[in-house]
Every structure is written in C-alpha cells, then in structure tokens.
Length: 102
Image 1: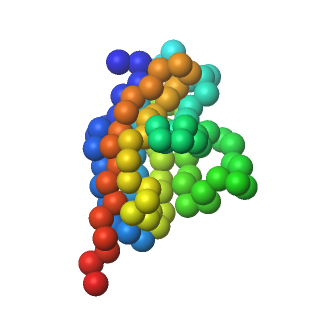
Image 2: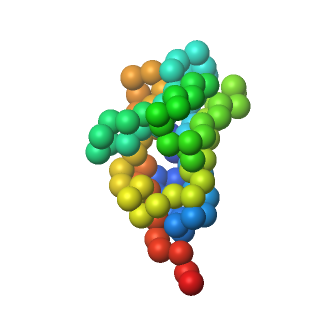
Image 3: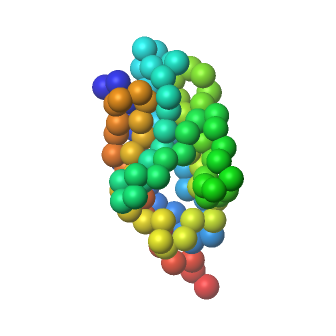
C-alpha cells in the first residue's frame, strides 16, 4: 500500500502518551503528510505548527518512510477515527482513550 499504519487500532490512558506510526512508500517523500480526525476533518501537518491546534499533538517525519504522531495527555474526548495521509492517500486508525486508573 502507498500509506499504511503499524497498527490500525491504538489505545492509551487519559493523561498518558499515544503514538501512531504511519508508513508511506518512497514515492510520497515530498508529499504533504497529515494526521486528521474524521469527525471534524481537523488535521495536523508534518513540519507545520499552528497555535490554534492542540499543542499535545506532535508529528515528526524521519524523512525515510515513517512519520509519527505523538499525543501527550490524551482525553476521553480524543477517542474516535483518525487517518494518516500522504498526498491524496489515507489510512484509517481507531484511537481509544480509557480512564486513567486511580
């Protein structure tokens, strides 16, 4: 596939860290890479930070074939379907956040 994910379902605890690795083939090296939420189509773009976006989401591209989304301190409201995209190609990921254990 042009774009795939290491795991199509990821989960973590409230306040912890969640990381998703998106894999793309070499033809997409120069394409725009994003992590987006289906529900509201809000996207985080590799190499671009927007102050209005959630500062707890960081995206880094190793410049070879992987880009990684790291979410620090996720909340229960962050649950849902997201997708990794490179150019016009995308791959869905289901994100689950569970209540932190007391």
